[in-house]
Length: 457
Image 1 (tube, rainbow, N blue to C red):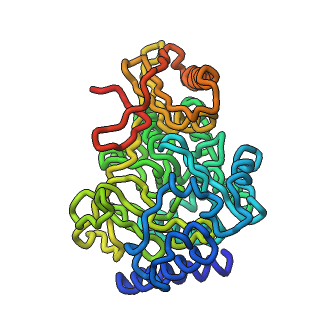
Image 2 (cartoon, helix red, strand yellow):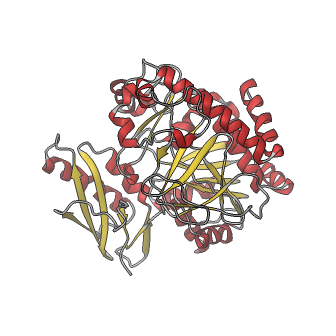
């Protein structure tokens, strides 16, 4: 553990011991420093904040940002003037550079097309150090002394389920930490969520991990395989992330694997935003992050009421500041102290549920695919601005596309059809019909976009 990580770890422990007052004090100080840094280095924020007070300790004073706004002003957004959209795009276009240091000092992650338009995010070492420390604090809230002993007897083997085929933050982060640490190279095994399910099951069976970490929808599918007896592993801890699960999903995972389930609600933009507790709440790591539930006019939503969206602020990353950023998820703030005893505020989340698609194979078995498998496929296809997959029959998938206009539609569709055919065939679903929908992607009545629409019951 580096000296900076050690200092961060000690401070994170002290913050929890000091309680809400100590946590709030740290948040105010870090926000003021973060806003000052953004003003000094980012032309975008300097322009946005020109009429604000010299020192800002209240995030509600800040204008709202979004992925679309920041990507449109990418070069002005970054505080390091060497970081440009052209350079970052060239970097992520090379799969051999996943997890390598961009400009010799930064980690680059992209958001999957499964959640809409692609974003490009650059993280500095300060962000990564905070992420490691806060993630460890979250795990500590789920584990007991006996669990640590079991982890040790299992050799600490960890299976990390990642999206490959691009610079997705899970895969890029895995490459970085295993490159920098021989111990992590020894105990952590990366497994692609794009592997055909039988292959993934076989790989996990061989590894027999103590920890199963990765995309929630993939872990849910694997829990089904475990319950059916096709997978037989005994992890101590299961850690689904990236997609919101219901309480029933989490109970199913814990029951299937006979393991503790540790959840997080986070994003590429702030990977350590929250951690889950046994009472079904996500606790916001308020010493290093801010989550503001707001209505459609960005006014505060009272605790106990569902918000229209939530604005997040990451207080660590200085190279690409995320300040009052609309993540487009509906959340509810707990009006009461959580029964788990945490001094951190707690949320429930409605957004980003992991819609899975289940199809019959030619032999009549049921095979489930996760939204991530589809999202990363479309993300690496040039010319697609938005996509939507609608399962209109048990064996029929309808594809709706919104194109950028700089690639021939016929060329885009041919590649999409080929990629989907390869994905389905690899999972014994060559019988599934792929339709090209002429209509554009649809939005729900509330305006929320869903990339994957399962078959209506």
